[in-house]
Image: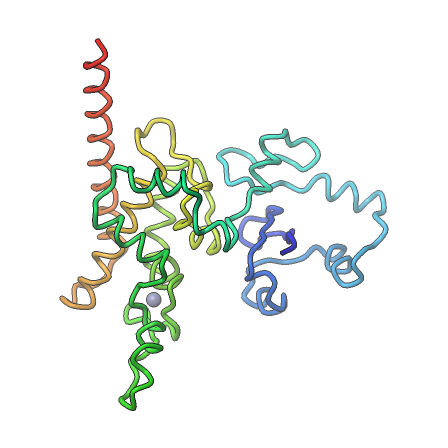
Length: 270
Ligand SMILES: [Zn+2]
């Protein structure tokens, strides 16, 4: 899969991805105003190469890079190696989602609730009862098939990415909590949808929080899940503030537990 460079319509930054979505006909994505090509790059995309005039070279050098970090974005010309690495870092590919043995070992040993681990594991196995999956499983026996629609926002296709991340109020919970607790400030749909991969490469918890990437992801996942089923079975409306406060509370509990474990370890060493 080749890497795609594009200017994000949201941030105005040069960004890069190696995912499938940008390989759809680009007009489709452009129509949704997800990104825009610089006129020169658009021409280059069509003919595959164009001579870089001085002006274009200068303009490319002056493009700010989307590294997802705090502070003013670095320019391509003056970015240091760390900034280039962060910029080139892309969401994991399909193959990488399955995890290496050390990543699995870390996952099983992580201090997260058993229920969160189970949901995460089921997600990796694609065994989450989304509208699309229910429709596929129960749609072939002659009876009316279950609808593929999202029962929260009425989106036509409740697939796994929509169920976990992209339903608007769930997306807001993910993005808000991640921005509060990690050093990355902008999250694309693709980046959010890659969070279940075991390498957690996109999450760098802020230094002041004694918490791991797996714990942050597990906390949000757990509360998205709980509120989803409270909505389905108990008709409790799914609200973003409820998701935010539940996830924050849970993260604070995990931080307190981490602190306790750390102090006990230090005490034992004395
Ligand atoms: Zn939805």
